[in-house]
Image (cartoon, rainbow, N blue to C red; front, side, top):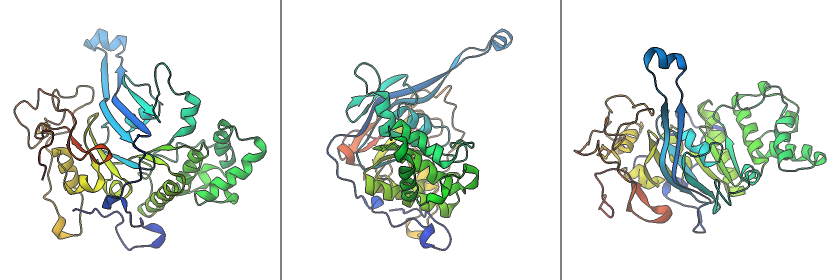
Length: 366
Ligand code: SF4
């Protein structure tokens, strides 16, 4: 199996990702019911053209098909990695899953309760239970607030009495590798990694069970990335958190995820336990993504698959299989019929599912 490298250069104890059991197929204990479940989840954004553009160029309103008919489950204490090229809808899916965006269609359940419609989960409960760690720690923290104020807002939302907030803030800072000296400092006085730790502390202040980590490493140095990965893994082990870990770096996803979902142009095209997906990718898009990972082990090098053409716009996604305009294994009919996400091996959390006309349910995938 191809094992991606995560940290180039000399190993440093504080700057390397510790050996993860996850990529070897170890999965957390599951009580059978997902903590988060999405069915047919769709999010479209209308693009309204201006009156002038309509008058001069005949422009019409259009729609961004950011997320289309996505099914996924995330179990307690597990990390689902979500990968795909920039603009494929990963962040929109993450925000829709935690209720920041209302879906255009479909539904999300949190611990069995729907987020939308009648008998939906109380939004205040959801805000406590589900949190986001944002991509950019520079812009996600209010520059005019001290750490005390930033975390204090979250503690107030959770109903922590004013008299207890300082002690809780210090405990949270220590939990993420900072300390009480930092409590009255402003975001600009911290390094990028420290700011991301503040973002993690703010999320933890709500006592969440589910965290969407939206590209939390992409603006950090490689050695700092490893420290944040270790912190997130420690928190998961200690607090039982479930993560949706969004990233475009497959090496990181391999090391942190129990399962992986691959997105292309708004749709999930393949999902499987991490070792299964990296060892036996089925969808031509996944195969192309994995072929681009550099490996120092010559035995496991794959032949690089270069995809032709550019990613189509989500404003006018191609009909049929959305990948057909770039797929090296395109078949007659791929441009007409939308392939369903079907199970080709395993079941439940161990299922390997793929959306491609090359595969039929129960087909031998070896
Ligand atoms: Fe390629 Fe057709 Fe499969 Fe789409 S359905 S990935 S175009 S072979």
